[in-house]
Length: 275
Length: 232
Image (cartoon, rainbow over all chains, first blue to last red; front, side):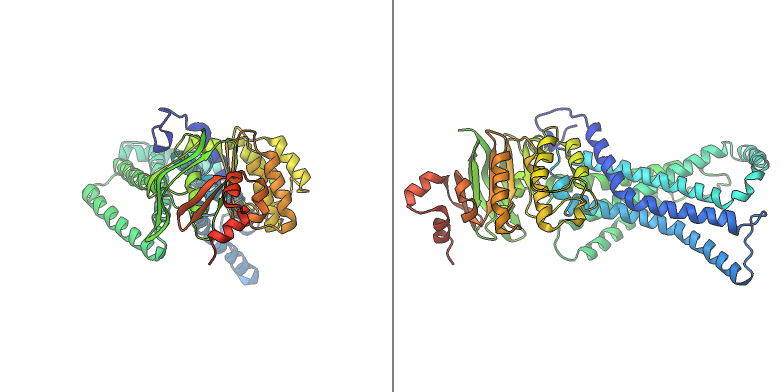
């Protein structure tokens, strides 16, 4: 890896340092995120065991029924809150560990800026995937009383998949995987954008919120306008699932994430100022 | 003369405020150096530049023959003037983390110092007083076997009784032939251990040299000279 920090060595194996940064980022964020995931799973299990009936319906009659409804609504809210909390923790961790008090330790470790960032990106990706898996697991817990109908559902799903392939020309699984890939790309774009935003605002002492809003506005205008240029007519006359469009859109987001990542790296390498 | 820290025309500006004004400096290897000056003289800025936490506006700085970066960070142990450790960790976890990242971290030395300072390894940072946290930071810094130790106000936050103990910890635990830079304005407390000093005033080096030579030349103690040089 050729960086300003490695002028004497032409190659530095980045994996050991990235692995260590990843490990400590997982531990730091995990102590906040994991208990929240556990709460979601417990609430889902309670709904699945005590609130859902055999027909997978919620009876909301009477006081007990209202409590059941509230529980279901709270779980729904928790899904959204968990996603927001995950992003918020990732952003706060970056701010504290790379630009705040903890940076006095982290930025004096024998680790390059690139390794610091890649360790964090990997941790972010794992948390994003963990959110997806926990959401699926939670849905499975909510539908626990319907598990007996699984063989029937699977056979129905087989039929649906066959019909989908006939209509679209590719399998449902490849579409689901493409959607997951696009989801991860957007999620990583959000994380890396927050890193870039924090790094830029750290360069100034005043009006940081205003600058953050400005960065968001400018980035958003550029992002949407360029998206319009590239994909403006993508849906016209399309009556099948746009797999290619989904993959291209994911690629578009990855390009934006790369741009934000390069800006963050340049700032940390050339203008780091811990005050 | 071997040098561990070298600055050439080093300048650091925060907006319009100039913190360091094109300083030239050479710190010899194998000495205990006092970086002395009043508040706002540029001591912390110079040390942060050496640790790689700030980027110079212009000029050059080299630590142990390297520009601040991965190689120099392996050879330099830095302790800032603030508590920076993860509050949720206990001392044992911090030691493990240090061992993970620094190949020159001496675990036995760290546990030995903890024992002598009556700090339990399983104690969490958040349950500790500010003074104890600073002691833990110092232990983590001094347990590394490096060429240069940079200590920014290591005795500023502790009571006078603990200062001697901390200074002894520093003197007895740094690697032989290594250099220790201590930044402080509590000169009386550190004078006896210093063998080289640098006086910083408003971002410029106003005096530097061997402590004994300066005492002989001026006929004053370093503390008295400091008071004379920086009187308001």
